Image (tube, rainbow, N blue to C red; front, side, top):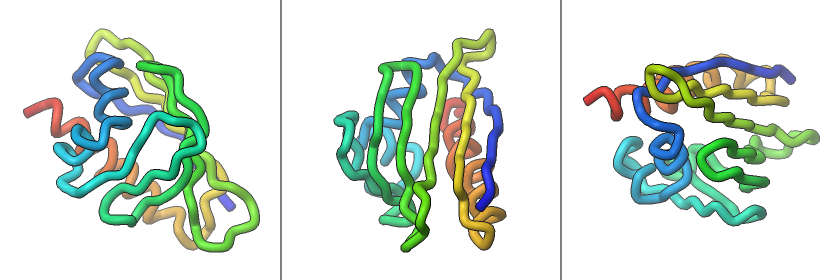
Length: 126
C-alpha cells in the first residue's frame, strides 16, 4: 500500500472548486461523464461512469472533502482528503490519498494529475 500527496493550483475560487468537486451537474461539465455525488456524509458516490466509486465521509463547505475510495476487496480503506486553500492565483488544492494498492499506484497518480485535477485546471482556464 502506498500514499500520494500533491498540490495543485486551480484558477478559480475555493467556492467554485468545491462546487466543481461536489455538485453532480458541475462534475458532469468538466469530466464529460455522469456523476453521482452528494455532500451528505455516508452517501455513496460514483465518477467517470463508475471508474471511481466510494463513500463520502465528511465535508467542510468550500474548504475540505474526505472520501473513502473502493478498490475491490482491499483490507484497509483508501482515504482521499482534499483541502482547499485560497491562493493569489485562485485555489491551492492539497490532496492526500492513503492506502493505494501497489498495483494501482501509477494509474492513480496519473489519474489525479491528468484526468482529475489536470482536467479541472483546463476547465477553469478556458
